[in-house]
Length: 146
Picture 1 (tube, rainbow, N blue to C red):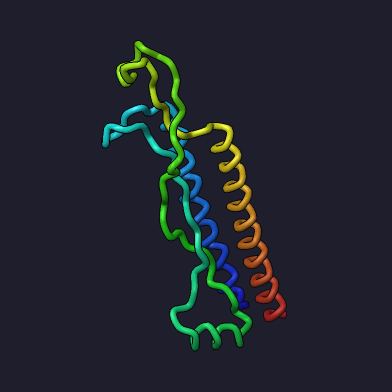
Picture 2: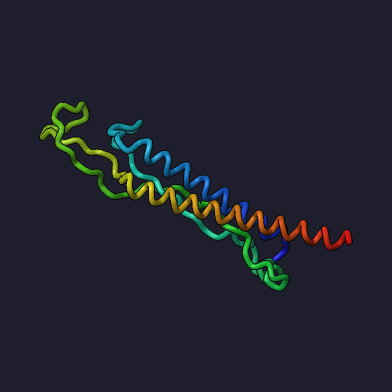
């Protein structure tokens, strides 16, 4: 893999993790949103990643021969969690049903914070790879000057 290929892979990872952190932040911000634009409680969102792939087999083969196996990661979609929200008894709430229960979003703050830590660590790992690759390229330039 070339130096620039390693930087490209790290850049795709940082971009994907940034979107993941933004989505997690949206989930946390809407933890108590009982009525969205569609009139329903907010639904937790998750990000789906896939490997960036080469468009054709021949291109994949030629890149593998150059020891350039991967192209990084891409976000394919953001999906809503289909699980049900939690019911809380609060008959005074404006969104309470006839039995006095309010459906809250299916967002668990502990889970979201754990996912945020995971996304942050993955972002930091990609930054470390980027900095290491940059350092190796700079050392190679220094060696070439001497």
